[in-house]
Image (cartoon, rainbow, N blue to C red; front, side, top):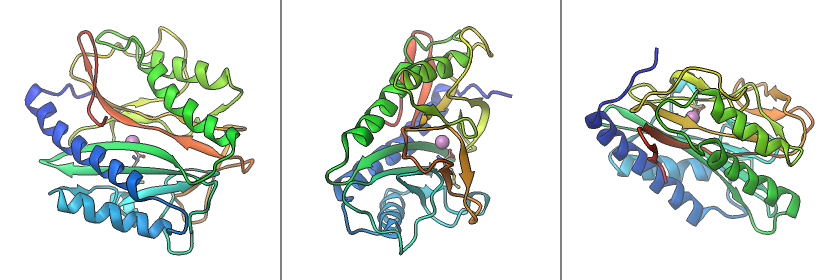
Length: 248
Ligand code: MF3
Ligand code: CO
């Protein structure tokens, strides 16, 4: 069941999404080689709480931290820890959610640490492009799977793998609401999206194969072939004539 939001609810979501956006901007200004992923998590938790919001990854399904920090071959849901130290040449995705006024915002960015190989740099750039390709032409009435079709087309034109086992999602009073928003699909298929639908569109793209393996911690997902992956996500509202991106 897809909940269409009222303008009042969207106004409230704009606030939680602003916290998410500002927190990611803050992380981007601080992240550097030598930091542990745990330090990133501490920065995120402090920033979100001091913004009058709650870091809603914390405790979600038992997740033990305030954000997901996924380094290189880790695709998503990396649990921050003291022993993972960021190195020159790493690509690091930071995915976080904030709950304010009863509504969640959710976004992710992949940061390049120091000198990153051209191969990884391109992966990060194309993953971001995949988001914008995915939402090209998106407006009320667009079939849901057009998003994934466009993401997949762009990613695969570079020979990259589109992660299948994790998807985008609706968002609102719950962090994950209907519909599921895959990053692959057939043009012209899926439910026609209504104005006022709030979605997280989040391409997760791998340099090699799309196959992933779950770590023993039950959260972290790594590429099965060990090649790097990148992630880029925003929360957006479907409008009559386009989209409004809330976390940019
Ligand atoms: N933005 C992530 C997602 O939509 C947040 C996951 S919640 C966590 O999957 F528990 F993994 F942190
Ligand atoms: Co999400």
